[in-house]
Image 1 (cartoon, helix red, strand yellow):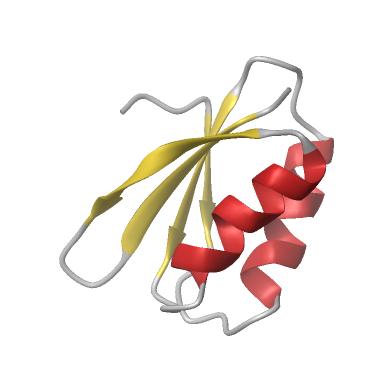
Image 2: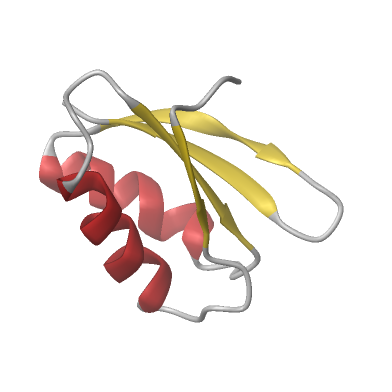
Length: 75
């Protein structure tokens, strides 16, 4: 999936991936897609939940070798 920006959250534990995601999304414009690269297992639940709470769109995830990429579209 193509993203407009990438957030490297590898090595960060909850709640830091969500904190960084929130900060990064504030700088983006509606319609842009952010790829969050995280290896914290909690991100698989936390990122979709954050999207639902904030009104942004969770587009899905793609597993990698040592991390998972999560794709979020700013609303």
